[in-house]
Image (cartoon, helix red, strand yellow):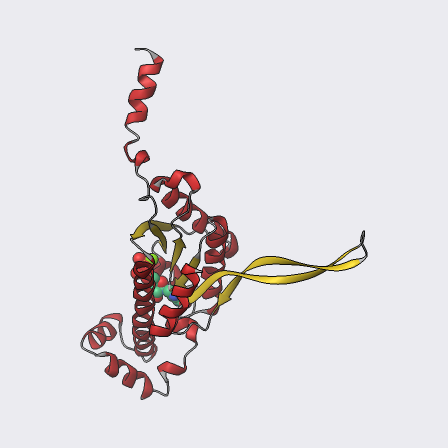
Amino acid sequence: MRLRDLESRMREREWFHTLTLLPGAWAVVRVDGRGFSRYTEERFDKPFDARFGDLMTDTARTLLTEFSGRYAYTESDEISLVLDPSFDMFGREVEKLVSIAAGTASAAFTHAAGEPVAFDARVWMGAGDADVVDYLSWRQADAARCSLNGWCYWTLRHEGRTARQATRQLDRASVPDKNELLYARGINFNDLPAWQRRGVGLWWETYEKTGHDPVRGVDVTATRRRVRVERELPMKDEYRTLVQGLITA
Ligand SMILES: Nc1nc2c(ncn2[C@@H]2O[C@H](COP(=O)(O)OP(=O)(O)O)[C@@H](O)[C@H]2O)c(=O)[nH]1
Ligand SMILES: [Mg+2]
Protein backbone atom coordinates (compact mmCIF):
# COMPACT_ATOMS: atom_id res chain seq x y z
CA MET A 1 0.00 0.00 0.00
CA ARG A 2 1.30 3.41 -0.93
CA LEU A 3 2.03 5.64 2.02
CA ARG A 4 0.00 8.47 0.50
CA ASP A 5 -3.11 6.24 0.31
CA LEU A 6 -2.64 5.09 3.87
CA GLU A 7 -2.22 8.69 4.96
CA SER A 8 -5.45 9.86 3.35
CA ARG A 9 -7.39 6.76 4.44
CA MET A 10 -6.32 7.28 8.05
CA ARG A 11 -6.99 11.04 7.93
CA GLU A 12 -10.52 10.35 6.71
CA ARG A 13 -11.21 8.57 9.99
CA GLU A 14 -10.47 11.70 11.95
CA TRP A 15 -14.15 11.95 11.44
CA PHE A 16 -15.05 14.82 13.70
CA HIS A 17 -12.21 17.02 12.52
CA THR A 18 -14.40 18.78 9.96
CA LEU A 19 -17.01 19.72 12.56
CA THR A 20 -16.94 23.50 12.98
CA LEU A 21 -19.01 26.17 14.68
CA LEU A 22 -21.67 27.54 12.36
CA PRO A 23 -20.24 30.62 10.60
CA GLY A 24 -21.51 33.82 12.20
CA ALA A 25 -23.03 32.09 15.22
CA TRP A 26 -22.41 33.00 18.81
CA ALA A 27 -20.86 30.19 20.82
CA VAL A 28 -20.50 29.41 24.48
CA VAL A 29 -18.01 26.84 25.71
CA ARG A 30 -18.96 25.53 29.13
CA VAL A 31 -16.42 23.66 31.21
CA ASP A 32 -17.46 21.70 34.30
CA GLY A 33 -15.26 20.14 36.97
CA ARG A 34 -15.16 16.35 36.75
CA GLY A 35 -16.26 14.63 39.95
CA PHE A 36 -16.09 17.86 41.93
CA SER A 37 -18.67 16.67 44.45
CA ARG A 38 -16.09 14.21 45.72
CA TYR A 39 -13.09 16.48 45.08
CA THR A 40 -14.55 19.38 47.10
CA GLU A 41 -15.95 17.18 49.89
CA GLU A 42 -12.87 17.07 52.10
CA ARG A 43 -10.96 20.07 50.84
CA PHE A 44 -13.35 23.01 50.95
CA ASP A 45 -15.99 24.49 53.23
CA LYS A 46 -19.57 23.51 52.43
CA PRO A 47 -21.64 24.80 50.82
CA PHE A 48 -19.32 27.62 49.69
CA ASP A 49 -15.66 28.24 50.07
CA ALA A 50 -14.01 31.54 49.13
CA ARG A 51 -10.74 29.85 48.13
CA PHE A 52 -12.59 27.47 45.81
CA GLY A 53 -14.49 30.45 44.37
CA ASP A 54 -11.18 32.25 43.74
CA LEU A 55 -9.72 29.18 42.01
CA MET A 56 -12.74 29.04 39.68
CA THR A 57 -12.57 32.79 39.05
CA ASP A 58 -8.86 32.62 38.20
CA THR A 59 -9.58 29.70 35.85
CA ALA A 60 -12.34 31.77 34.19
CA ARG A 61 -9.89 34.66 33.79
CA THR A 62 -7.40 32.34 32.06
CA LEU A 63 -10.09 31.11 29.64
CA LEU A 64 -11.28 34.65 28.87
CA THR A 65 -7.69 35.69 28.16
CA GLU A 66 -6.54 32.63 26.20
CA PHE A 67 -9.59 32.64 23.91
CA SER A 68 -10.10 36.42 23.81
CA GLY A 69 -13.66 35.73 24.91
CA ARG A 70 -16.37 38.35 25.16
CA TYR A 71 -17.59 37.37 28.63
CA ALA A 72 -17.00 34.61 31.16
CA TYR A 73 -19.36 33.52 33.91
CA THR A 74 -18.64 31.11 36.73
CA GLU A 75 -20.89 29.47 39.31
CA SER A 76 -20.28 26.33 41.35
CA ASP A 77 -17.77 24.16 39.42
CA GLU A 78 -18.64 25.47 35.95
CA ILE A 79 -17.48 28.28 33.67
CA SER A 80 -19.28 29.58 30.57
CA LEU A 81 -17.10 31.37 28.05
CA VAL A 82 -18.90 33.50 25.44
CA LEU A 83 -17.23 33.67 22.01
CA ASP A 84 -18.50 36.26 19.57
CA PRO A 85 -19.55 35.49 15.98
CA SER A 86 -16.17 36.62 14.61
CA PHE A 87 -14.24 34.14 16.78
CA ASP A 88 -11.79 32.45 14.42
CA MET A 89 -9.22 30.53 16.46
CA PHE A 90 -8.51 26.94 15.24
CA GLY A 91 -10.63 27.58 12.15
CA ARG A 92 -13.65 27.30 14.54
CA GLU A 93 -13.04 23.54 14.82
CA VAL A 94 -15.18 22.05 17.58
CA GLU A 95 -12.71 19.30 18.57
CA LYS A 96 -9.93 21.82 19.05
CA LEU A 97 -12.15 24.26 20.88
CA VAL A 98 -13.56 21.82 23.43
CA SER A 99 -10.29 19.97 24.01
CA ILE A 100 -8.21 23.11 24.42
CA ALA A 101 -10.86 24.74 26.62
CA ALA A 102 -11.01 21.68 28.89
CA GLY A 103 -7.22 21.37 28.86
CA THR A 104 -6.66 25.05 29.61
CA ALA A 105 -9.17 25.02 32.49
CA SER A 106 -7.70 21.80 33.91
CA ALA A 107 -4.14 23.15 33.71
CA ALA A 108 -5.01 26.54 35.21
CA PHE A 109 -6.96 25.08 38.15
CA THR A 110 -4.41 22.32 38.76
CA HIS A 111 -1.51 24.77 38.71
CA ALA A 112 -3.22 27.09 41.21
CA ALA A 113 -4.57 24.33 43.49
CA GLY A 114 -1.44 22.19 43.37
CA GLU A 115 -3.48 19.01 42.81
CA PRO A 116 -4.63 17.45 39.55
CA VAL A 117 -8.25 18.05 38.52
CA ALA A 118 -10.00 17.68 35.17
CA PHE A 119 -12.75 19.65 33.43
CA ASP A 120 -15.01 18.49 30.63
CA ALA A 121 -16.20 20.94 27.96
CA ARG A 122 -19.17 21.30 25.64
CA VAL A 123 -20.30 23.82 23.07
CA TRP A 124 -23.58 25.71 22.91
CA MET A 125 -24.46 27.80 19.84
CA GLY A 126 -26.73 30.82 19.68
CA ALA A 127 -28.49 32.32 16.67
CA GLY A 128 -28.21 35.89 17.92
CA ASP A 129 -27.41 38.03 20.93
CA ALA A 130 -30.91 37.51 22.41
CA ASP A 131 -30.15 33.79 22.52
CA VAL A 132 -26.91 34.44 24.41
CA VAL A 133 -28.75 36.61 26.95
CA ASP A 134 -31.22 33.75 27.48
CA TYR A 135 -28.33 31.30 27.92
CA LEU A 136 -26.65 33.49 30.53
CA SER A 137 -29.94 34.04 32.37
CA TRP A 138 -30.41 30.28 32.43
CA ARG A 139 -27.01 29.68 34.04
CA GLN A 140 -27.61 32.44 36.58
CA ALA A 141 -30.99 30.96 37.51
CA ASP A 142 -29.19 27.62 37.97
CA ALA A 143 -26.68 29.33 40.27
CA ALA A 144 -29.51 30.71 42.44
CA ARG A 145 -31.28 27.35 42.60
CA CYS A 146 -28.10 25.44 43.48
CA SER A 147 -27.05 28.02 46.02
CA LEU A 148 -30.36 27.90 47.92
CA ASN A 149 -30.36 24.12 47.77
CA GLY A 150 -26.73 23.86 48.85
CA TRP A 151 -27.26 26.15 51.82
CA CYS A 152 -30.32 24.17 52.95
CA TYR A 153 -28.64 20.82 52.43
CA TRP A 154 -25.48 21.68 54.37
CA THR A 155 -27.41 23.45 57.12
CA LEU A 156 -29.36 20.22 57.67
CA ARG A 157 -26.21 18.08 57.43
CA HIS A 158 -24.41 20.26 59.97
CA GLU A 159 -27.39 19.75 62.28
CA GLY A 160 -26.76 16.01 62.12
CA ARG A 161 -29.14 14.83 59.35
CA THR A 162 -27.82 12.10 57.10
CA ALA A 163 -27.37 12.75 53.37
CA ARG A 164 -30.53 10.78 52.66
CA GLN A 165 -32.61 12.58 55.30
CA ALA A 166 -31.49 16.00 54.09
CA THR A 167 -32.16 15.12 50.45
CA ARG A 168 -35.60 13.72 51.24
CA GLN A 169 -36.58 16.77 53.29
CA LEU A 170 -35.51 19.12 50.49
CA ASP A 171 -37.18 17.12 47.71
CA ARG A 172 -40.54 18.07 49.16
CA ALA A 173 -39.70 21.73 49.86
CA SER A 174 -40.68 24.70 47.67
CA VAL A 175 -38.47 27.76 47.20
CA PRO A 176 -40.32 29.72 49.95
CA ASP A 177 -40.02 26.63 52.22
CA LYS A 178 -36.27 26.59 51.68
CA ASN A 179 -35.92 30.31 52.41
CA GLU A 180 -37.99 29.76 55.55
CA LEU A 181 -35.86 26.78 56.62
CA LEU A 182 -32.77 29.02 56.55
CA TYR A 183 -34.55 32.02 58.08
CA ALA A 184 -35.69 29.92 61.07
CA ARG A 185 -31.98 29.23 61.71
CA GLY A 186 -30.94 32.87 61.52
CA ILE A 187 -29.79 32.82 57.87
CA ASN A 188 -31.33 35.34 55.48
CA PHE A 189 -30.60 33.89 52.04
CA ASN A 190 -30.74 37.34 50.43
CA ASP A 191 -27.98 38.60 52.73
CA LEU A 192 -25.52 35.89 51.74
CA PRO A 193 -22.62 37.04 49.51
CA ALA A 194 -23.76 37.79 45.95
CA TRP A 195 -21.07 35.58 44.37
CA GLN A 196 -22.63 32.56 46.06
CA ARG A 197 -26.18 33.32 44.88
CA ARG A 198 -25.56 34.93 41.49
CA GLY A 199 -22.16 33.72 40.30
CA VAL A 200 -19.22 35.85 39.12
CA GLY A 201 -18.88 37.64 35.75
CA LEU A 202 -15.66 38.61 33.99
CA TRP A 203 -15.22 40.87 30.98
CA TRP A 204 -12.77 43.22 29.32
CA GLU A 205 -12.76 46.88 30.28
CA THR A 206 -10.57 49.69 28.96
CA TYR A 207 -8.79 52.21 31.11
CA GLU A 208 -6.43 55.12 30.60
CA LYS A 209 -2.88 54.53 31.72
CA THR A 210 -0.65 57.57 32.18
CA GLY A 211 3.07 57.18 31.70
CA HIS A 212 6.07 59.40 31.09
CA ASP A 213 7.82 59.57 27.74
CA PRO A 214 11.46 60.26 28.70
CA VAL A 215 12.50 61.10 25.12
CA ARG A 216 9.97 63.87 24.61
CA GLY A 217 9.82 64.66 28.31
CA VAL A 218 6.03 64.62 28.40
CA ASP A 219 3.29 62.62 30.12
CA VAL A 220 1.39 60.37 27.74
CA THR A 221 -1.83 58.45 28.21
CA ALA A 222 -2.54 55.18 26.51
CA THR A 223 -5.74 53.13 26.42
CA ARG A 224 -5.22 49.66 27.85
CA ARG A 225 -7.55 46.79 28.55
CA ARG A 226 -7.85 44.58 31.57
CA VAL A 227 -10.18 41.91 32.91
CA ARG A 228 -12.89 43.18 35.19
CA VAL A 229 -14.08 40.65 37.79
CA GLU A 230 -17.58 41.35 39.12
CA ARG A 231 -18.55 39.51 42.29
CA GLU A 232 -21.67 41.64 42.86
CA LEU A 233 -23.67 40.87 39.73
CA PRO A 234 -27.26 42.10 39.48
CA MET A 235 -29.92 39.46 38.82
CA LYS A 236 -32.86 38.78 36.52
CA ASP A 237 -33.74 41.73 34.19
CA GLU A 238 -30.87 43.89 35.42
CA TYR A 239 -28.44 41.06 34.70
CA ARG A 240 -29.96 40.60 31.23
CA THR A 241 -29.42 44.30 30.54
CA LEU A 242 -25.83 44.11 31.75
CA VAL A 243 -24.88 41.12 29.59
CA GLN A 244 -26.83 42.45 26.60
CA GLY A 245 -24.67 45.58 26.81
CA LEU A 246 -21.47 43.57 27.14
CA ILE A 247 -22.06 41.30 24.18
CA THR A 248 -23.33 43.98 21.82
CA ALA A 249 -20.70 46.57 22.79
N1 LIG B 1 -17.15 22.55 49.22
C1 LIG B 1 -17.54 23.22 48.14
N2 LIG B 1 -18.09 22.54 47.11
C2 LIG B 1 -18.48 23.24 46.03
C3 LIG B 1 -18.32 24.63 45.93
N3 LIG B 1 -18.80 25.03 44.73
C4 LIG B 1 -19.24 23.91 44.10
N4 LIG B 1 -19.05 22.83 44.88
C5 LIG B 1 -19.46 21.46 44.61
O1 LIG B 1 -19.17 21.08 43.28
C6 LIG B 1 -20.16 20.14 42.84
C7 LIG B 1 -20.57 20.48 41.44
O2 LIG B 1 -21.66 19.74 41.00
P1 LIG B 1 -21.64 18.77 39.76
O3 LIG B 1 -20.82 19.34 38.63
O4 LIG B 1 -23.06 18.42 39.45
O5 LIG B 1 -20.95 17.48 40.39
P2 LIG B 1 -19.78 16.55 39.82
O6 LIG B 1 -20.37 15.78 38.70
O7 LIG B 1 -19.38 15.69 40.99
O8 LIG B 1 -18.67 17.46 39.37
C8 LIG B 1 -21.30 20.16 43.85
O9 LIG B 1 -21.28 18.99 44.59
C9 LIG B 1 -20.97 21.34 44.73
O10 LIG B 1 -21.35 21.11 46.03
C10 LIG B 1 -17.72 25.32 47.05
O11 LIG B 1 -17.56 26.56 47.06
N5 LIG B 1 -17.36 24.56 48.13
MG1 LIG C 1 -18.91 18.98 37.97
